[in-house]
Image (cartoon, rainbow, N blue to C red; front, side, top):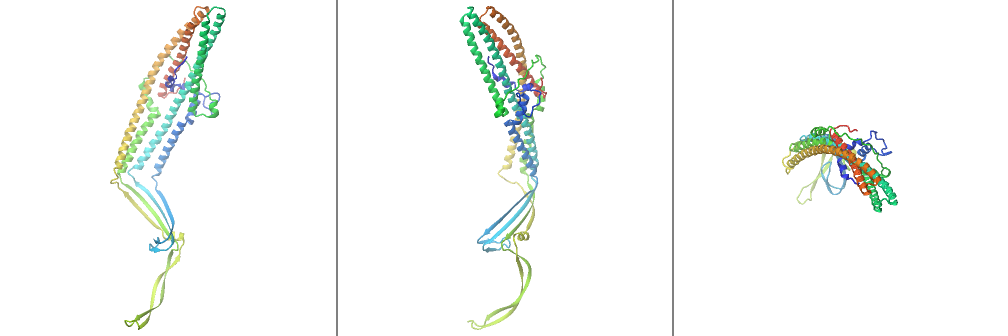
Amino acid sequence: MKKSTNLLLTLALGSVLLASPTIAQDNPGQGGWTLQEAIEYAQKNNLQVKQTRVNRDLNAIDLKQAKLDRLPTLNSNGSYSFNTGSYQNPVTFDLITENSQTSNFQANTVMPLFMGFQQKNLIKQYEYDLQASEFDVQAIQNDITLQLITSYLNVLFAEELIKTAELQRTTTQQQLDRTRLLFKAGSVAEVAVLDLESQLATDDLDIITAQNQRDIARLSLIQILNLENEQAQNFNIVIPDVPEPDEAPALVDPNTVYDVALKTQPGIQAADLRIRSADKALAFARGAYYPRISLGAGLNTRYLKGGQRGIGRETITGVQQQTFYLDENGTQTQTFFIPFSREQTIYEDRNLIEQYQDNINKNAYISASIPIFNGLAARNNVQRAKLGQLNAKLNADAERNQLRQTIEQAYVDALAAQRKYAAAKVQVQALEKNYKNAELRLNSGVINTVDFYVITTNYRTAQSNLIQAKYEYTFKLKVLDFYQGKEITL
C-alpha cells in the first residue's frame, strides 16, 4: 500500500509535540536523534542559519562604523624625493638648478560639525537593520526547523509504511502457507496458490518502496543537519509514541490566533523594523539638501639636503678698490680706495629632524560646503529612498497577509483533519469486524483467497488512513497552538 508524501509538507509545525523532553547533550544522536536534539543542532550548524548570522554581524559592524564616523579623522603623509634640474627650493622657495634631495611631511584632522543630520539618521537606520537581522536569524531558524520537522515526519511515516507493509506480507505468507496445504489436500485449485504468490511478491515490492522512501527522507534530514562522515553513516532517529488525539477540541478563532501571532512571529517584527529603517534612510537622503560644516586643523613641514639656518649676524668691514678712467680712450686712470662696512647672516647646516622642527607650519580652519547643483543627485536619492520606504511597507503588508492566510489555512485544515480522523476511526472499526469475519469464513472455505485478500487490503488501507489522519489531525491543532505562542506539549 502506498501513501503520498506530499501531505507531510502541510504537517510541519505541529510535530514539535514529538520532541523528547530530554535536554540535548553535548554529543547529540547517541542512541538515536530525538526531534528536539535535531532542532537544537540544526539551529546552530545549518549553513543557512550560519549565513544569516554572518549578515547580522555585518550589520553590527555597519552600526559600529556609523557611530565612529562622528569622531574626528586624522591622516598624515610624507615623501622624500631626489631632484635633478630646475626646481623650487621648498625652504627658500627660490628657483634653482642643481641636484638635491627634499622631503616634506603633512598631518591634518577634520571633525564634522553639521552634516544635515545624516549621521544621526544613518545610525538609527543601522540600529533598525541590526534589530531586524536579529529577527531574521530567528525566522530562518524557524524555517529550518520546519524543513527538519518535515523530513523527520517523512522518516516516521516511512517507518509506519514499512511496518504496515511487513504486517501485510506476514498475513499474505500465512495465507499462502495455508493455501498450499489445502492445495496439496485437493481442497483448492492451484490458481489460489499462484494468486497468493503474486500478492506476496507485490508485498515485497511495497516493503522495498517504503524502505526507499525512508532512506530518502533520512538523507534529507542528514543534509539539513549538515552531518558528515561518521555522524551521517550512523544516523538514526528515535521513534516517539503519538497518543490518540481528542476528537472534539476547542478550536480558537483564526482572528484571535492572528492577533497573537502578529506580536510573536519574527518575520513580522523584522518587516516592521525595516519600515523604520526605510524612514531613516529617507531622512538621511534628505540631509543632502543641507550645508555641511566641519572644523579642521593641519600641520606641515619640509626639508632640503644641505639646508642651513641663520644663527646670527656679523659686521664685515674693509676697503674696496675702485678705478676710474680719465679720458675717452681709457689710457689715463685714477684708483681710489673706499672703506665699507656691512652686515651678513651667519648660517649653520641642519639635518632632517632639525629642519622639520625649524619649518613647522600650523593651521586651523572651518569650512562650509553648500549644495547648489549636483546633477539632481540629492533629489534622485530622495526619490529612491521614498520608493524603498514604499517597498518596505508593501513587504510588511505581504508578510502579514501571508501569516493570515497560513493561520486561516491551518484552521480549515484542522477542521478537515478532525472530520477525517473521526470518519477514519469509524471505517477502521467497521472493516476490522469484516476482516475477522472474513478470516473465519476463509478458514471454513466459504470464501476464496482473492475475496479475502480484497477484504484484508481494505482493512490495512483503513488502518494506514487512520494513522495518517491521527498525525494530520494532531499536528494541525498544534500549528494553531504554535501561532498562539503556546508551549507545544502532549
